[in-house]
Image (tube, rainbow, N blue to C red; front, side, top):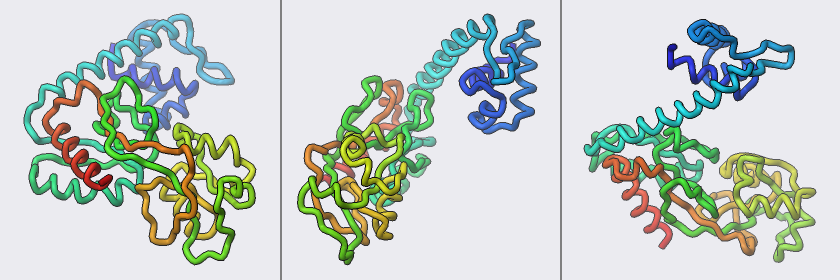
Length: 285
């Protein structure tokens, strides 16, 4: 059996179609189709029923899903443990952070790292999505959260609170209390940011005032700067075109550094980690 066909098999099982698997894997439809056929021929068994509503696993396919997921976890563990043996401060470190952090906090850190450790290469992935650290989609995540995942190693590096913001110079209403939010247009978050309590609170209490949504804090700030509505933004985000009006009560959160336990002693990752801690804690003061 060609082990390289297992990710294709799992993607089809998760997506229920060849087209969905192709999108997930970043491959074309014909490649996914060819690899599935090759896997079925290698194993001598039919793994999916090709039905009108999609690809449905056969009994053999259901069993292979269980075994393939176990194999996938084992391969991930092998990769992490081998990486963990690397003692040299060199190689690639993949960091993920929200756009405002990536734009304002991280560049000077990485510039200094390049000077001090020229053999370390930084790859910065920008966005508010949760990248899977188990699968090494990122080595370090800089993430705003009130409850970091228990299976990761984390360190709180900055306290955050949240503010109602609007465009500078606007003659629009200036709320002085939370109760007045019922009278103004608000910019909300989509599902990917609902892990943050402040947006859960906003959705539960003021959903009727939400005129636009985004999965990115910097985009929310840009929408507010354009006059579309009022945005709720964290204290670490400074925007020239916005002014802060009202602190949102009971919205305290924190900025965390996160990594996988198997990677915390890798020299190059520890070097980047320590530099981020020093920078962010200095900025918090």
